[in-house]
Amino acid sequence: MSGRLETRGLSGIIVRPMPKRFVTLAWVAAACAYLLIVLGAVVRITGSGMGCGDHWPLCNGHLFPSLNDIPTVIEWSHRLVAAVLSVLVIALVVLDWRRAWPVLALLVVQVLLGAVTVKTGLTPVMVILHLATAMLLLGSLIAAARAPWIPTPSSWILIGLTFITVLFGALTANLGAIASCGGFPLCNGQIIPHAGPLAAIHWTHRVLAYTLVGYLVWWIVRSKKRRAWILLSIVVLQIAIAATMIQLGFPGALQAAHAAVGAGVWGMVVIAAVRPAPASSVP
Image 1 (tube, rainbow, N blue to C red):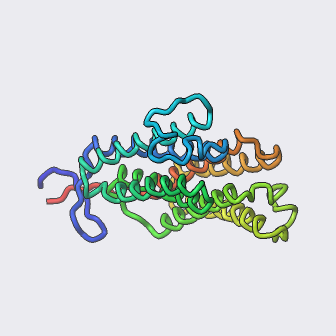
Image 2 (image 1 turned 45 degrees about the vertical axis):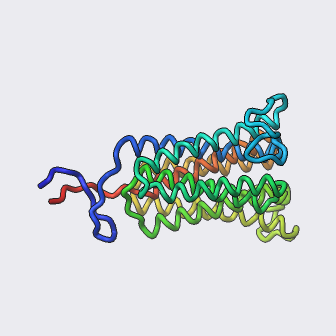
Image 3 (image 1 turned 90 degrees about the vertical axis):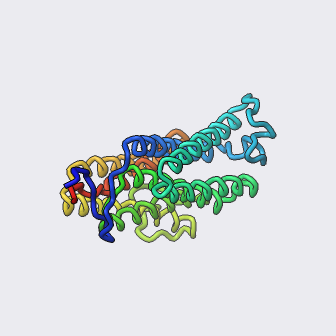
């Protein structure tokens, strides 16, 4: 026996645990990606998307712009965090490019989408694609930090359902459908709303959220993951924030909290679903 802890992947290939410095750096990068998503939401909520004008990668024509107004500060902070994340991902690639190349690929797509989003004047489609890639980037960083791991069909369903729910939340916010459904938990007091396509998008987001809660309860009971009850609590908190936000007329602070907790739910789902493979000694 060699005494080294290794695992066999799904293909039967021997997989060694990741070095501690790679894991630590991946978690730091994941935290940075989460912050980037939250700042992106703040940019949208405060209308700061053009705080740097239509310049990219510069801000108002400068690498270090004059921070004399709030929109510029918010947008430039968002770009600064993106730059820090880029450095962290490059460091991961240097440490182990075979593990980190998917993260690098997503980062490149994310940066390009950010540039196109600015150049096209923040069209909703580009903003949503930008968020979707950011969520995938966060998930990939978490997966890299927990590698090697073994996926299960139920965990993929949970990940997919959460991802779609978050995307419909982005659709609801960026298409101006937030106020199309009054009341809670129904949409304008109706199970099937008749207020047009925006209400349908908003209601779909809510139905997905309710479905996520139900599936999460089933998944927790079936998988016997006690810590996953914390995840369920966060999802319930997210729904409570949404209900309060609707009742109070969608204040910006609650919109930001809803976006932050939503990104947190996504990260927690990936952490719970991406189960590290059990280590075992092999000859």
